[in-house]
Image (cartoon, rainbow, N blue to C red; front, side, top):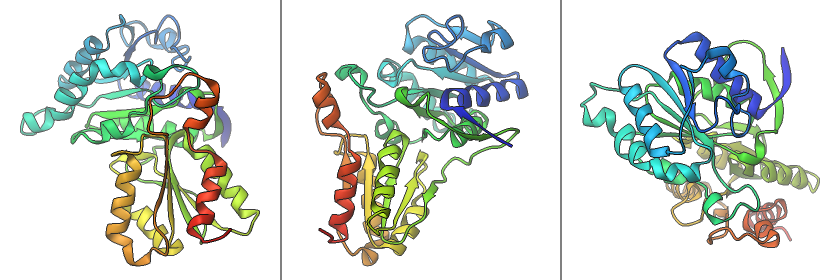
Amino acid sequence: MAREITLRDALREGMSEEMRRDENVFLMGEEVAEYNGAYKVSKGMLDEFGAKRVIDTPISELGFAGIGVGAAMNGLRPIIEFMTWNFAVLAFDQIVNNAAKTVSQSAGQFNCPIVFRGPSGSAGQLGQQHSQTFESWMANVPGLKVISCIDPKDTKGLIKSAIRDNDPICFMESEVMYGHTGEVPEGEYLTPIGKAAIRKEGTDVTLVSYNKMMIPTLEAATALAQEGISAEVIDLRTIRPLDYETIINSVKKTNRLIIVDETWPFAGVSSEVAFTTQKHAFDYLDAPVIRLNAKDVSLPYAPTLVAAYLPTTAEIVKAAKEVLYVK
């Protein structure tokens, strides 16, 4: 039985179910308890689980990330919420130098089962220091897994899988998508880490994206269908490990690839997808791969420039016609 619920409710359900299942799971971060979460993701969790398992912290990302890493190394399963991944930059020493390297530094004697979560990416007029996208940053680090999804059903299943995973996981959400709704089944289920989802099957061109860029990508697929162009749409869901097989198999069918990615173009997620595709499916490509990224600038504050910063539905449609050589 499925219901329509929001992304924030799906996250809360997933975390709460895991906290009921395993007493070693706890939530810690800024405003997660008394205020019910900066985006109300943890609403009601303090009342259910108490102050020992839903813990408000000072505004000290490095400090409480470090407490989480230590707790994970000693058998607990922390969920560390950052109000935004922009603030998590202060905690990168713990995420990159400690959590990611625990297994290798200890020769496998210690795991670090911790989930670092919060919104990544732009959210309108928030200024340059609050609008950065961190999926490619964290995916560059061996030892970390990176998840980035806005589909409520899959997000609930992925947060549950992430909490149960023995590796440190960076869970990327979207501030502007917490109210996004979708059908979510009742009852227990998990979404596999490292497996992409085909949101729409097609034969003419493959569109690959993730997180909130899925919205214009799916809109573009609908617009293209009205012109007789069949687009296959792949939602990566997991950035590391990346599901290369699903992408390659799709390109072998459609012979064309467009990647829609909110990260900056240099050394971004789209670069990895494009390289791997040409390496393993070069002979199947009938047109050059096109990447549509955020503009290669720090996000300005002016609303006109904010609107011009991210890939649009119209740009995706244009790119699809370009690789199909259609005017």
